[in-house]
Amino acid sequence: MRILTRVAIAIALSTGALCAHGQSYPAKPVRFIIPFPPGGPTDIMGRLAAQRLTEAWGVQVVADNRAGAGGNIGSEMCAKSPPDGYTICMMTVAQSISPAIYPKLGFDPLKDLAPVTLMATLPSLLMVHPSLPVKNVKDLVALAKAKPGILTYASTGNGTSPHMLMEMFKWMAGVNLVHVPYKGASPAMIDQISGQIDVAFSTAIAALPFVQQGKVRAIAISTKDRFPPLPDLPTVDQGGVKDFDGSSWQGVVMPANTPRDMVVKANAELAKMLKSADMKEKILQQGGIASGNSPEEFAAFMKSETEKWAKVAKAAKVRVE
Image (tube, rainbow, N blue to C red; front, side, top):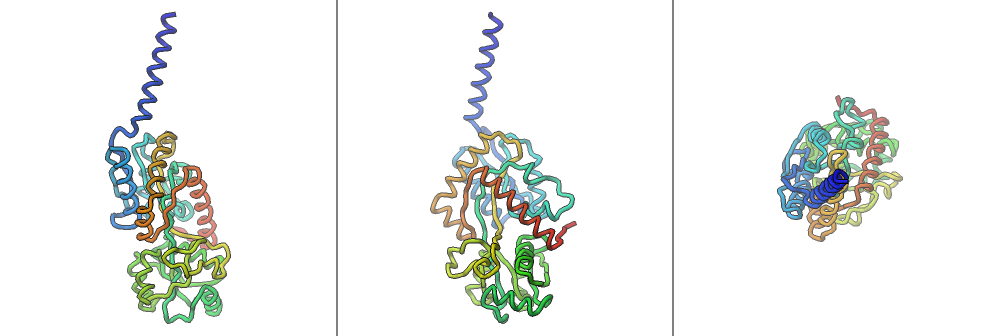
């Protein structure tokens, strides 16, 4: 009888300790991996999220930039971190493209990461040089079909979002454009402004100033919905390439097998942040549309994005060694 009593007490104490642990999380500083360099849109978004969690939780959530290989180095580090709730990470569209184009990727984004929430989508502008006789998507498709393999398009490198967006456009519109990869958005934009490049997709935040100055002409937005700062600009879908929908995006994940209650706690705080008017405005100023969804919804989104870009990569035969 005494043995049974001791066992019951031990179980009660153990259960109480577990409850206290759950209530006290996080009890120490949390690392927030940002798999891109400081200063870019993902870094800015990650630091906003880390600041929000620091304020809400009362412990330091420390931004840790781990750049390289298009975000894959930091993402692999995240995937291989202990699933104890003390590692949180930014994830972008790049990691939904990577499985299709990197033959030796060291992690599986769908299996090795636990989705927390989609933070924001970042639409891209489809732009042409003002000298090109193109006012809309139908004009561009007609010109490209009349001059197959003549028009050039810029990207920020093989396998990047601008590259994959244009490859999806080529595939869905049935046109042939020549890819000219650059090492970053700035040199690509410089050559498009000068007229050496005919067409490109570029994130709204990067391209909008040049559109407003008349140095390039925006003919469509890449997403299924119009972009609030440019309400009169039609989508690519509305322009005639039916069902076209693509953008950059940013989300938050944790290592796979992180306890569910910890994932939910992070999701709840980030959802509050993304619903606030001031945060929506800050994200809009960065060229993004605030999102915020459940872990299950974000998991479904990640799966659909991975499948979509795998089809594009296969059609375009895109591989990065």
